[in-house]
Amino acid sequence: MKKTFLILTLIALSVGLSAQKTMTLDQIQNNWQSKNLQVSDASSANILQLVTAFQQVWPTYSGRELIKFAESKTPYDNTDKVVDLKNGFVLYSEDDPDAESDEVLEACVWNRKNGHKLFAVTLNRMTPSELVVLCFYDYDPATQTLTPEKSLDNLFKPSFPGYRYRPWLPQNGKNLVVKEYFGSITITHTYGWDGMKPTRPQVTLDELDRCWAQFRESYYGDERHPFTQYAMIDIDKDGSPEMVLQSDNEEFRAVYSIALTINLIAVENGSRFLAFYKNAVGHTGSCGALCMSGVYVILKDSYPKSYLREQSEWNEELEDYTDSDYFLNGQEISKEKGREMVRQLGEPYEPELKWTELAVE
View (spheres, rainbow, N blue to C red):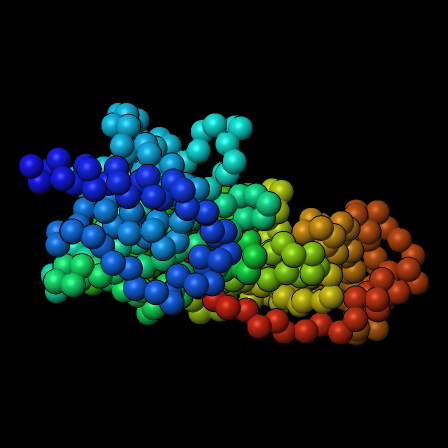
């Protein structure tokens, strides 16, 4: 009888929900913390009842279609449409190319050690511009109320503003995963569970070994992995970042362009020292016995546009270094042109880099 009542309740709600005008994800992102949600007849609410309560106040295309899918009792295939009441997880991703929306909705629920539940909804839109909304609510079974968990609003902070990321809520287990996508690099933030909320994440970089291999090939002779931190910086101010890796003692640093492929473009390793310029990055220092050099990589659209190298040799008779020779993309150029290119780089500056710890062995 109770199961029949629940089904009838959901059907009645869905009729009303289908008539609702949907809200944009921008509206929900700006306002979801402003209202408590009431869950009808659900002292021990399941995930679908919680999603229905969310949909009543914050109606979306994907929420409406998810509830319709749940009513249809169509078996899910673990890909784009899931209603898993046992594990407290739902997913709706539109597979119809002619659909009115490309929203993806995921929702899950954790059991809190105080007897409440933590309910999470994530909504992801690709067009006309990408947007991710991640909402957290505390569910109190005594009052049947979902209260916005404002303390978790800034749980995840992107490594670089305005760039693509997506949360993945758990269907199995308790870990929340957020993946950031930077061209050829994916950064994964894995949040554990402390009984009340997702905890400080373990952060991994999927191409870290490849980055290390490029650095080790020319600049590092040790088998041990030196990099324990990363930061993002937009050197050429095109809206796409470059990546800097650093050792925990700050002795080793490496700068990579990552928009198309991974390219090591500048290093610091004890004998060479990094310098950042407007639209360029370089390193200067020893290039062998009695040799000094500077390498400057000029970027355009987040890709190395040109490589300028200056090099001078020690002159024993003069007891000083000779005037620098200059090479542009491997071809020698005049000293006058080389000096002018270096002058145009301007003064080096020290960027403010926000370092994030990596989980490395």
